[in-house]
Image (tube, rainbow, N blue to C red; front, side):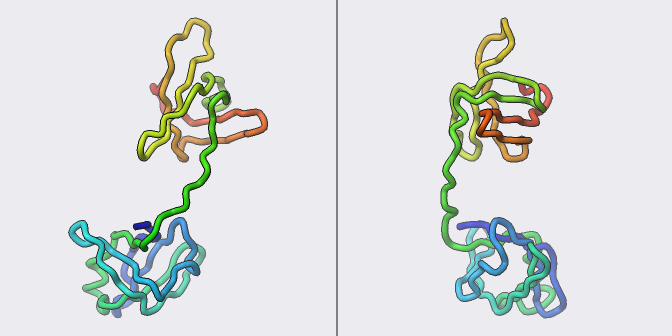
Length: 162
């Protein structure tokens, strides 16, 4: 199951839902295919009756069996899923790259560890006298810049990580 949206709030009194769409455009949602909302840990299918785009990443959607304000309020805050899997993006191998923290040299990436849910980098320190490798999480929120030409990766590392 792929999460494609989150229900932000009810819209009107007829069961309309304002959703925030993520990782997909509103026009890519197939109204002929069911969407799923989890109840008690189980995905429950709903068919789209109507969907109207609102801005670039929001839409008002009407689903079967959600036809009043009370039903709509019950699902506010829940995620909307579709069946399928995201295509795997080709991962860049950062081995041999220079790791920076806000432009300051930290060390050289000596390897990568694909820990489920979070790719990590093994980094050898660049300071003379420093020993051992550090394991640094590589999360998109930490990346300041990636420069394949100079093979540098600049991160915003949390204080105390090194």
